[in-house]
Amino acid sequence: MDATSARRGETYGGRSRAQRASDRRERIVASAVHLFGTRDYDDVTVTDVCSRAKVSKRYFYEHFRDREDLVIKVQRERNEWLLREVAAAAPPSPAGLADVFRPALRTLVGLLRDNPETAHVIYINAPRMETRRRGVLHEDAHFVGLMLRPLMTPKDQVAYDRTLLALVAGVSEVIIDWLTHGMPGDPDQLADHLTTIAVALAGSL
Image (tube, rainbow, N blue to C red):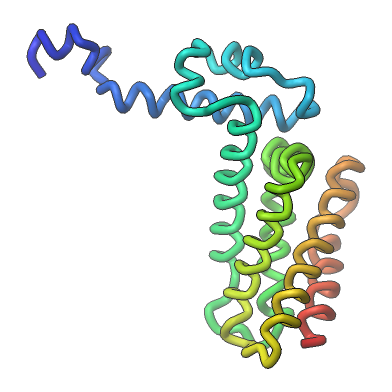
Protein backbone atom coordinates (compact mmCIF):
# COMPACT_ATOMS: atom_id res chain seq x y z
CA MET A 1 0.00 0.00 0.00
CA ASP A 2 1.54 3.34 -1.05
CA ALA A 3 1.52 6.55 0.97
CA THR A 4 -1.31 8.04 -1.10
CA SER A 5 -3.60 5.09 -0.35
CA ALA A 6 -2.67 5.27 3.32
CA ARG A 7 -3.61 8.96 3.39
CA ARG A 8 -7.00 8.05 1.90
CA GLY A 9 -7.59 5.88 4.95
CA GLU A 10 -7.10 2.48 3.33
CA THR A 11 -4.70 1.48 6.12
CA TYR A 12 -4.32 2.78 9.63
CA GLY A 13 -2.28 1.19 12.37
CA GLY A 14 -1.50 -1.68 10.05
CA ARG A 15 -5.17 -2.54 9.49
CA SER A 16 -7.28 -2.12 6.38
CA ARG A 17 -10.48 -0.10 6.24
CA ALA A 18 -12.50 -3.34 6.11
CA GLN A 19 -10.71 -4.70 9.18
CA ARG A 20 -11.39 -1.52 11.12
CA ALA A 21 -15.06 -1.59 10.11
CA SER A 22 -15.32 -5.23 11.16
CA ASP A 23 -13.73 -4.42 14.52
CA ARG A 24 -16.17 -1.56 15.10
CA ARG A 25 -19.12 -3.80 14.26
CA GLU A 26 -17.88 -6.46 16.68
CA ARG A 27 -17.60 -3.84 19.43
CA ILE A 28 -21.11 -2.58 18.70
CA VAL A 29 -22.51 -6.12 18.83
CA ALA A 30 -20.65 -6.91 22.07
CA SER A 31 -21.97 -3.68 23.57
CA ALA A 32 -25.51 -4.50 22.44
CA VAL A 33 -25.37 -8.03 23.89
CA HIS A 34 -24.29 -6.63 27.25
CA LEU A 35 -26.78 -3.78 27.34
CA PHE A 36 -29.81 -5.64 25.98
CA GLY A 37 -28.75 -8.60 28.13
CA THR A 38 -28.79 -6.58 31.35
CA ARG A 39 -31.49 -3.95 30.75
CA ASP A 40 -35.00 -3.77 29.35
CA TYR A 41 -35.20 -3.05 25.64
CA ASP A 42 -36.80 0.37 26.20
CA ASP A 43 -33.97 1.42 28.54
CA VAL A 44 -31.23 1.03 25.91
CA THR A 45 -30.51 3.75 23.36
CA VAL A 46 -28.25 3.93 20.34
CA THR A 47 -26.18 6.46 22.28
CA ASP A 48 -25.73 3.93 25.11
CA VAL A 49 -24.57 1.26 22.68
CA CYS A 50 -22.12 3.58 20.92
CA SER A 51 -20.75 4.93 24.19
CA ARG A 52 -19.96 1.46 25.53
CA ALA A 53 -18.54 0.35 22.17
CA LYS A 54 -16.47 3.55 21.91
CA VAL A 55 -17.68 4.33 18.39
CA SER A 56 -19.47 7.33 16.96
CA LYS A 57 -23.06 7.17 15.77
CA ARG A 58 -21.77 7.68 12.23
CA TYR A 59 -20.09 4.28 12.38
CA PHE A 60 -23.14 2.72 14.04
CA TYR A 61 -25.32 3.71 11.09
CA GLU A 62 -22.87 2.15 8.66
CA HIS A 63 -23.99 -1.25 9.99
CA PHE A 64 -27.48 -0.81 11.48
CA ARG A 65 -30.53 1.26 10.56
CA ASP A 66 -31.67 1.88 14.13
CA ARG A 67 -32.01 0.26 17.55
CA GLU A 68 -34.62 -2.26 16.41
CA ASP A 69 -32.49 -3.33 13.44
CA LEU A 70 -29.56 -3.77 15.83
CA VAL A 71 -31.38 -6.00 18.31
CA ILE A 72 -32.95 -8.07 15.53
CA LYS A 73 -29.58 -8.72 13.87
CA VAL A 74 -27.85 -9.40 17.17
CA GLN A 75 -30.62 -11.79 18.20
CA ARG A 76 -30.40 -13.60 14.86
CA GLU A 77 -26.61 -13.96 15.07
CA ARG A 78 -26.71 -15.15 18.69
CA ASN A 79 -29.52 -17.60 17.94
CA GLU A 80 -27.62 -19.00 14.95
CA TRP A 81 -24.59 -19.51 17.19
CA LEU A 82 -26.77 -21.28 19.76
CA LEU A 83 -28.31 -23.60 17.16
CA ARG A 84 -24.89 -24.51 15.74
CA GLU A 85 -23.71 -25.54 19.19
CA VAL A 86 -26.89 -27.52 19.86
CA ALA A 87 -26.64 -29.29 16.51
CA ALA A 88 -23.03 -30.25 17.23
CA ALA A 89 -24.17 -31.96 20.46
CA ALA A 90 -26.64 -34.29 18.73
CA PRO A 91 -25.33 -37.83 18.08
CA PRO A 92 -24.93 -38.80 14.41
CA SER A 93 -26.92 -42.03 14.81
CA PRO A 94 -29.48 -41.63 17.59
CA ALA A 95 -31.31 -44.72 18.79
CA GLY A 96 -34.44 -42.81 19.78
CA LEU A 97 -36.02 -39.44 20.41
CA ALA A 98 -34.47 -39.08 23.87
CA ASP A 99 -31.02 -39.61 22.33
CA VAL A 100 -31.66 -36.59 20.12
CA PHE A 101 -33.28 -34.29 22.63
CA ARG A 102 -31.36 -34.93 25.86
CA PRO A 103 -27.84 -33.92 24.68
CA ALA A 104 -29.25 -31.10 22.60
CA LEU A 105 -31.31 -29.65 25.45
CA ARG A 106 -28.54 -30.10 28.01
CA THR A 107 -26.24 -28.19 25.68
CA LEU A 108 -28.90 -25.51 25.16
CA VAL A 109 -29.56 -25.02 28.87
CA GLY A 110 -25.84 -25.09 29.71
CA LEU A 111 -24.99 -22.46 27.11
CA LEU A 112 -27.81 -20.21 28.29
CA ARG A 113 -26.70 -20.54 31.91
CA ASP A 114 -23.08 -19.77 30.97
CA ASN A 115 -24.08 -16.85 28.74
CA PRO A 116 -26.91 -15.09 30.61
CA GLU A 117 -26.65 -11.87 28.58
CA THR A 118 -27.04 -13.79 25.32
CA ALA A 119 -29.92 -15.74 26.88
CA HIS A 120 -31.66 -12.50 27.79
CA VAL A 121 -31.20 -11.08 24.30
CA ILE A 122 -32.61 -14.20 22.61
CA TYR A 123 -35.48 -15.05 24.93
CA ILE A 124 -36.48 -11.86 26.74
CA ASN A 125 -35.75 -8.69 24.78
CA ALA A 126 -35.93 -9.81 21.14
CA PRO A 127 -39.28 -11.61 21.57
CA ARG A 128 -40.83 -8.21 22.35
CA MET A 129 -40.83 -7.78 18.57
CA GLU A 130 -43.68 -10.16 17.83
CA THR A 131 -43.06 -10.62 14.11
CA ARG A 132 -39.43 -11.56 14.68
CA ARG A 133 -40.38 -13.84 17.57
CA ARG A 134 -42.74 -15.81 15.35
CA GLY A 135 -40.13 -16.05 12.65
CA VAL A 136 -37.59 -17.41 15.12
CA LEU A 137 -40.03 -20.05 16.36
CA HIS A 138 -40.60 -21.26 12.80
CA GLU A 139 -36.86 -21.30 12.11
CA ASP A 140 -36.22 -23.28 15.28
CA ALA A 141 -39.04 -25.72 14.48
CA HIS A 142 -37.44 -26.33 11.08
CA PHE A 143 -34.10 -26.89 12.85
CA VAL A 144 -35.67 -29.50 15.16
CA GLY A 145 -37.21 -31.19 12.12
CA LEU A 146 -33.75 -31.53 10.58
CA MET A 147 -32.44 -33.07 13.81
CA LEU A 148 -35.26 -35.62 13.80
CA ARG A 149 -34.91 -36.53 10.12
CA PRO A 150 -32.85 -39.72 10.81
CA LEU A 151 -35.64 -41.00 13.04
CA MET A 152 -38.91 -39.76 11.60
CA THR A 153 -40.61 -39.50 8.22
CA PRO A 154 -43.79 -37.47 8.62
CA LYS A 155 -46.98 -39.04 7.27
CA ASP A 156 -48.92 -35.81 7.65
CA GLN A 157 -46.60 -32.87 6.99
CA VAL A 158 -49.04 -30.26 8.27
CA ALA A 159 -49.58 -32.06 11.57
CA TYR A 160 -45.82 -32.68 11.84
CA ASP A 161 -44.94 -29.01 11.29
CA ARG A 162 -47.57 -27.85 13.78
CA THR A 163 -46.38 -30.29 16.43
CA LEU A 164 -42.77 -29.15 16.02
CA LEU A 165 -43.89 -25.53 16.31
CA ALA A 166 -45.80 -26.36 19.49
CA LEU A 167 -42.73 -28.19 20.82
CA VAL A 168 -40.40 -25.27 20.17
CA ALA A 169 -42.87 -22.69 21.51
CA GLY A 170 -43.41 -24.73 24.68
CA VAL A 171 -39.69 -25.22 25.30
CA SER A 172 -39.13 -21.50 24.72
CA GLU A 173 -41.79 -20.53 27.25
CA VAL A 174 -40.31 -22.83 29.90
CA ILE A 175 -36.86 -21.33 29.26
CA ILE A 176 -38.25 -17.78 29.48
CA ASP A 177 -39.86 -18.64 32.82
CA TRP A 178 -36.55 -20.10 34.04
CA LEU A 179 -34.59 -17.02 32.93
CA THR A 180 -37.02 -14.53 34.46
CA HIS A 181 -36.74 -16.32 37.82
CA GLY A 182 -32.94 -16.10 37.81
CA MET A 183 -32.08 -19.55 36.39
CA PRO A 184 -32.90 -21.50 39.57
CA GLY A 185 -32.13 -25.16 40.21
CA ASP A 186 -30.05 -27.79 38.48
CA PRO A 187 -29.72 -27.06 34.75
CA ASP A 188 -29.47 -30.78 33.95
CA GLN A 189 -32.79 -31.34 35.70
CA LEU A 190 -34.35 -28.59 33.60
CA ALA A 191 -32.91 -30.19 30.46
CA ASP A 192 -34.33 -33.57 31.50
CA HIS A 193 -37.77 -32.03 32.06
CA LEU A 194 -37.60 -30.39 28.64
CA THR A 195 -36.50 -33.71 27.13
CA THR A 196 -39.56 -35.42 28.62
CA ILE A 197 -41.81 -32.73 27.13
CA ALA A 198 -40.10 -32.88 23.73
CA VAL A 199 -40.19 -36.69 23.54
CA ALA A 200 -43.87 -36.73 24.52
CA LEU A 201 -44.81 -34.25 21.78
CA ALA A 202 -42.59 -35.67 19.06
CA GLY A 203 -43.58 -39.19 20.01
CA SER A 204 -47.22 -38.38 19.40
CA LEU A 205 -46.60 -38.10 15.65
